[in-house]
Image (cartoon, rainbow, N blue to C red; front, side, top):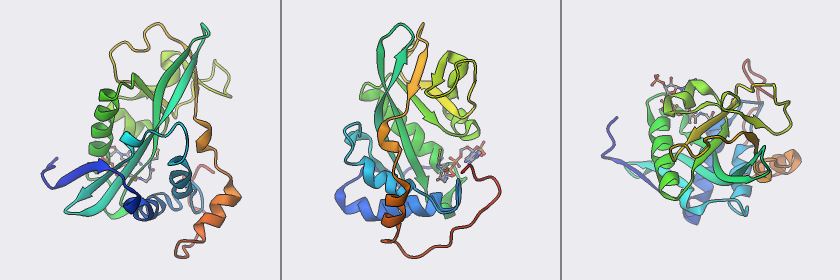
Length: 208
Ligand SMILES: CC(C)(COP(=O)(O)OP(=O)(O)OC[C@H]1O[C@@H](n2cnc3c(N)ncnc32)[C@H](O)[C@@H]1OP(=O)(O)O)[C@@H](O)C(=O)NCCC(=O)NCCS
């Protein structure tokens, strides 16, 4: 894709409100009636696992069109070791610009920066139809399981990508989502009152 007029840079406090608005617009009614993700972004910026260098906004011609943030996470290996790695999300593209390759561009660029920062692997919860195009595989097929799920269960939405070759060679274990992602829904509801009213709809395909 053309990229000359696209900038990916670190988020600054001056971007916070616009990024939360963008996240709310991108996620609203997609996975549940309304969404929590704008509150998740708000909370994670103060989380000890947050990676400020990988809190990235994407601009085109000066307009905010995308955002992604990364968190430090771990795989607890079956041999007892804790393997530090990273996860990311929420990732958002402005709704009117989705499905034009921008999400993949932001994702691929941010993963390259994560690799340069030393991250060896990423685990996420997401749709393989999108993330598979950027090299993710279902984590269970590589012996990495999801906390809270039985090991024989291959959870299709828990995905893995190595950023350093063979980083997870010979390692099996359990991926732990950073605690910061589990936000209090009542607090999210309260936070949402700071935004313009928006109708919550029950739509087909929602997960929650
Ligand atoms: C998910 C999201 C970041 C993807 O960004 P995007 O710019 O729309 O996606 P792209 O155009 O870069 O898509 C890259 C590829 O993934 C596929 N894809 C994108 N979104 C998809 C989805 N939701 N489901 C299935 N496939 C998807 C596209 O078909 C495309 O493949 P193609 O080029 O072969 O057609 C964006 O749609 C978004 O903000 N969605 C709402 C919030 C969200 O769901 N975030 C992710 C939560 S895990």
